[in-house]
Length: 254
Image 1: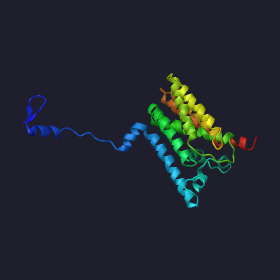
Image 2: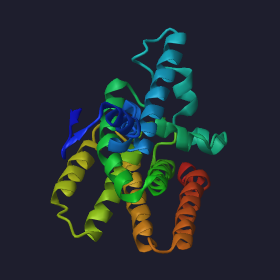
Image 3: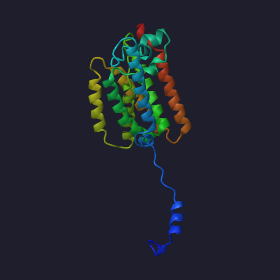
Image 4: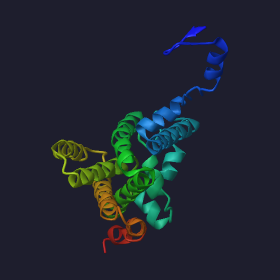
């Protein structure tokens, strides 16, 4: 007999009882990471890292160092070159540029920001709304670069989206009446850094504004799904239109 909490049980009863209890399932490490950091956030990070590897291999294929990934045919074809977007009709550059980075330090810094801010927004907004905010921030940064940037200088990086995430978090914190001083201080430091040579202030500010606008739409229409979709689509059309159609005014100086 086997001692039990109340009395005793025979060995056969114990074996039958154990057989009827299902062993708990252990999730994989990837599933655990997805639950902690967000599946969309990790997917975006993986896409950025993959593009860096592709551009590094491309640089090596033409005799350059893999760390100089920007000196590669892939980077040249996918970075946001305003004249290429406007005159050559290479519209995809306004999107693909946000998945390219200039060197490993640039990549690591942006991915760290994406992990911190993205995971929090994905938790609050859900996957679809968070992804919409991310992509609209990319378009906002691209539109600003096309409108006001140097038409001959290629630009790349996920910074436009990262600033959009900060703008989105700011709106949510404002609605929730949280203390914004920490976020505003961080934004001020990053905007100051954006004035350094080789950093796209326009892309950062464009992403920040687009992210804040997107979060505003999500908040104002949170109980009206149809209106929310319409608002997001309208903003996407406006930003894409500005990025692809209006640059002729700036480039030609009209």
